[in-house]
Image 1: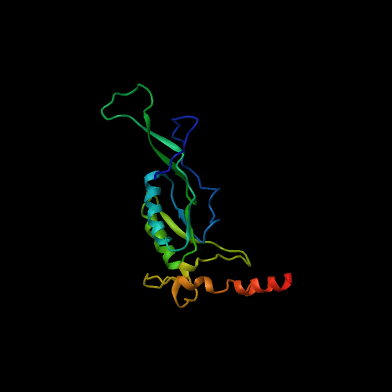
Image 2: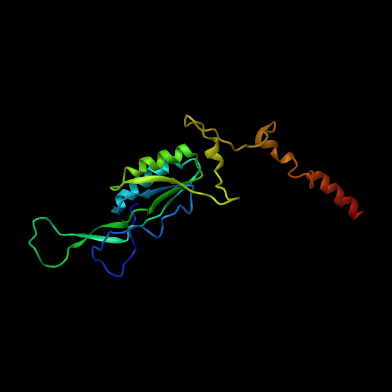
Length: 199
């Protein structure tokens, strides 16, 4: 689903300037690896959706991703073969203003090779240059990797690390005969103790 604001105060806005560097949103704050813009551009909602689909394929079996920019600027367009004047055109699509140094996407909870490959392909979806950076953790701080991400093999195959527990003879029919906890014991044992206490 394409990103766009639910409502805005004004439907049409000025074009603005794209000079300078990003002083906010220029650090990897959530994930372990980030995709940073090296140039200025208007990133459209279609470009963000294409990059999101790429990263989703690599974080499907464990891991998480964050999109750090949002297309909240409307770009207008007038119909073809229209004479000059008659006011500004109607809103056509939405863009996010990106300056050099802005973090576009972050990814965490996956292996380094998978994260870099996902961000490399996602970087080709944008019109400006991008680079991949790794987050510098503080002393004692670490990134927890998902169990499924750890279980993925180098060739991409997957081994489910979740253990279903011991299998009892007889299947689910005899599952009620097994005591649930060590303290409670069996149901018949608890009933016997209660009878002795009552006597």
